[in-house]
Length: 77
Image (cartoon, helix red, strand yellow):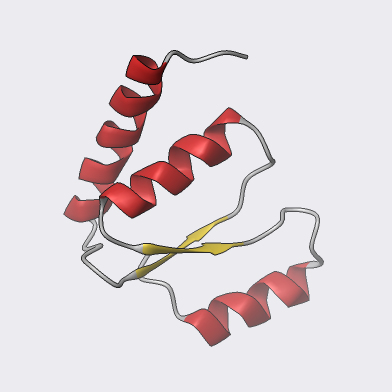
């Protein structure tokens, strides 16, 4: 897959606006659990544009580890 910088920026802006509507504000933690690739880049950029900090979760982690990380980090989204 490929994205131009413009496409990346547009996708990240759309997601950032959505995150802001969901209550993400500066210093909010946002969990992201996606395979490595363009979706991850878009997600990380969007979280940063929304003012949040990301909590990376690997989809390959066991379910109990992901649950623990979510409980421990208490993300806003």
